Length: 245
Image 1 (cartoon, rainbow, N blue to C red):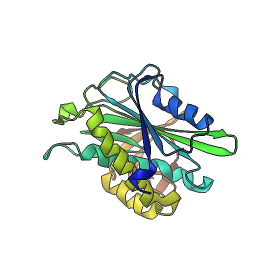
Image 2 (cartoon, helix red, strand yellow):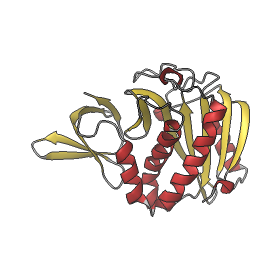
Image 3 (cartoon, helix red, strand yellow):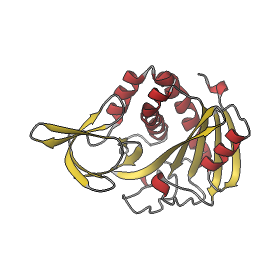
Image 4 (tube, rainbow, N blue to C red):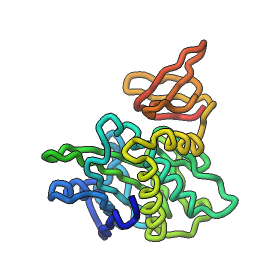
């Protein structure tokens, strides 16, 4: 993949950029198109949580059509997290705290959330539409309830959303080319692990019906969190909210 494979639609306002991408998919769009909006009126996060969308932050979603075989799709969030972490790192000033990935694909600076990523899928006719939504706190850090938050401005970055987006555009194209429909997963796991926060540390994972504590040992080839619960026992976790300490 090269940059010319991707397109960009810039909107002033949208209910959500993810919704706009799905609308394009229903209209037969071939995919590899980014939709950005200066403001979202109905932004959403994972598990249907509301996502405050103040003007000044970056709201961007990428539509992909049939991006990989079904058995490779579980690793796409890892690749996306790597791309977003690289884009954010590119605009942080020298000497600032590094951007880190918190499993599965939040981006943190000083353990405060600076970006959320929402990946959604929908079967449309014979096509599998995947939408990758990114909300990056550029100038504002709206509270979302679960984690401490921060913005790029809090860490000395002077870029605006329209200056950050080209980095996201480029890094995503580059990393998806490395991912290569799942064939480059081993390299993606290396990149993800190198940028991850909290490996080896004690964490608590909130699941729908319980919370489990242990030490974060990394991820497996499917992107599942490996939790060492003690006495030589490990547990693989496919989805959950991670808290450090």
